[in-house]
Length: 211
Length: 373
Image (cartoon, rainbow over all chains, first blue to last red):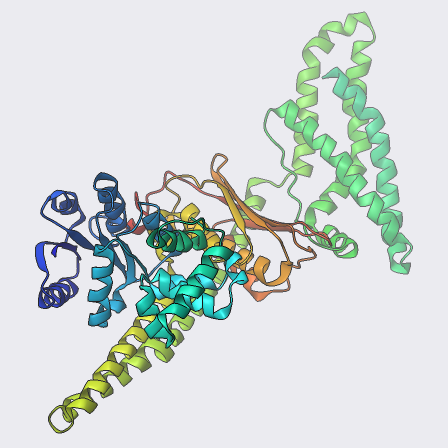
């Protein structure tokens, strides 16, 4: 994939470049300042972006705003947002910026290289990847989730992390068919109408985030 | 003005009656009987004196504030004690004593001047100065002078300053402890694990790989610890988006649905923003822990020169703000900015906590982090 990356810390930027290039991605732009971001994201040859939330000049939420902005101009453009902390309020904004192709992870997760590169592939394919920490925070409080069984909650949490049924099955040591049964039960309990499966998976996560 | 003068005569009689009742009740308080009388007569005294303060303010064209000590949230006996030890109450009492002769000399002169036609001119020109003089005397009794006000201000500032210093020191100790027990300990462990992995690299590559995987997990845990510490110092959303968004983020993580309305004034000084945030956080934590509420709400408003926040819930009420150390801590932090917190929580609810913080928006920002985002 041809990627734009934005990260203001040189050490982390170099680390990201090294990891991504080692997994056959091409870095078309590696940016350290928020001001250069809009221009780099406008490059039609870029296929996806990996953005840090906090960038100069204001060191607040430039990366997040840029992610929302680029996706309003290029709907579905895959963006992986990385941050030192994850906040549900930001997860909600990212998910509201259009269906699929969005990721929001703690920077720590990059350390698990295989998992990180895999997550990037999933969002490039139109999936949604949320950090387990956002997921567990939501699990701890959301009312409709109380209607789900413990196993269904586990399945929904993995779904929010963007996993396929096959991946969920192997993570939970059950058959893919069993996972299919759980997902159908989740859709029913969350009152989600019949639609293509991928779409309903995103809707389930959205409903549950209160978007 | 003549109307005021006329009105002051009957009021002066009332003042004398109240003085006698107050004095007798104060003596009887020794054998308890006086207490219920005082509970009625002291507020009545304050009312009468309040009327004269307003007269004086009207005549002099400048406010004469009632500078009583707050009896907010105190029981009946307790507030009686506060009233009795308030120096202003004693000045009120002294004023009651002089009110009758004062009213007789000033108000009666005004009225007598009015009666015969020949003194009409004297009445026309004399009433103003006489009543102004009268009001000056009232003000001298019923309001603190500049020096006294400054003394009280110095006293309040000394107290809140020492509280802020205590609070800051306690916070630093907490942060030091968090870092020492969390990140520091884990980083030390991390160094050891990596060292061991380096040693194993040649002999046992598989073992080294396991150790490195473990080291990665530890580094993740260190970051988690640091995140918690940072969150306790200055929450990221507050830094990124300001007070309202930070409160919304808090609300999202609460089990009770919380509605956030209104907005804080733009350009709020960062320390005020932060103190208000932590106070609201404490209030919402209490709602979640103790109130049994179905819903809660936070209203932000910015009347001129002030930030007002109301945190309310429809829970069971009966909250006692003096019971929890958390609430006392945040109240002290607000007091450093002359902010006040009042709690209204009747049994059966609703509970309303009102925060009022004066803020001077013209002062420059102290940190860039509360920036324009």
